[in-house]
Image (cartoon, rainbow, N blue to C red; front, top):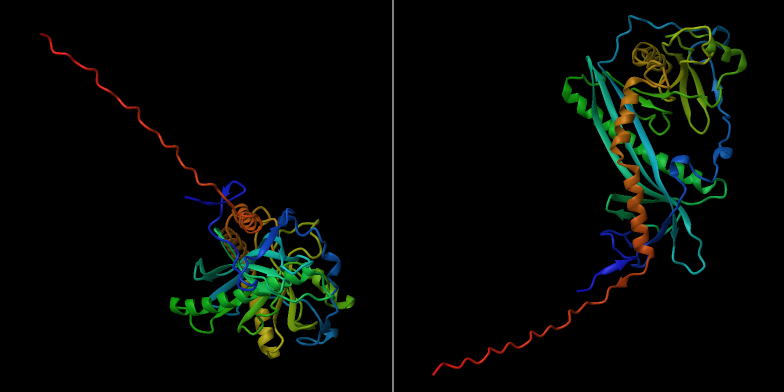
Length: 382
């Protein structure tokens, strides 16, 4: 009997598919750089500053801007749905297209997941989640990578001169993650309809910008960190002057997409050393909504979100990292799997494709001939 052996080890049971490579297994290698440290090609220099167009006269004229207090008598939704997604690059890979003299193309093998936590009544529970794995690359003939630990579906994108490849791949991954968040959000709303939540009595809170999800009804984007300021200097000072629970008036911001937005200060520990923007979050909703509905959503954010603000001794990102979002993020990261096993599976699969197969020689046992045994002659006594 003969067996396929590579580098003295049995070949893994799975290998990359070959649909786009003329029937040949796709050859690839795994970068030794630990993906948890980001890429060894820095991309921060390519992040442009905001050039948003701002209309500050949506709720109040610019000359009448003031801090707006919450309305304690405002009815709250029957259910709050918190949506979050996580992503993790398992390995950077280099894909060979097989062309003579052709250069290898960069790719990302990534795991990503999205889920929804429902806070209704006096409980919080996980309603929906979905986990996926993908190969994101500019290689035009790349195929899925199938390992014993899971399959990485190929997502091909075109390279451009305007952006470096790591940025293009990261944006492609983020776009797929947004798609999964939309799917889980829609499914979660359908699921809670059977739990006694009246239709139209929920509020969707998406962790991060609302871009790509602004078509969802009764949806808010929840931004915890701030890379730039949107307001002009004479109005921006109001943000730092907000008391816990207060918000700025609504304004309209537009870049390559438009949204209504406002700043809100969450409840937080008081003290003389508190930073001016401590506890400040920015909330977004669709630019297509009428101003009355937008102002109503802004009021809901004041009475709904503050009670989920985290404490400093429990969360290093307090108070902006809301408890439901923090718990959902931990659960989703757990469901991504062990990164060490996933990377090992990718390396074994890469070795199985690139290393030549060696056929072990058949071993034939030598024939053994048993010695002849002759019984001694026995003479009967006379």
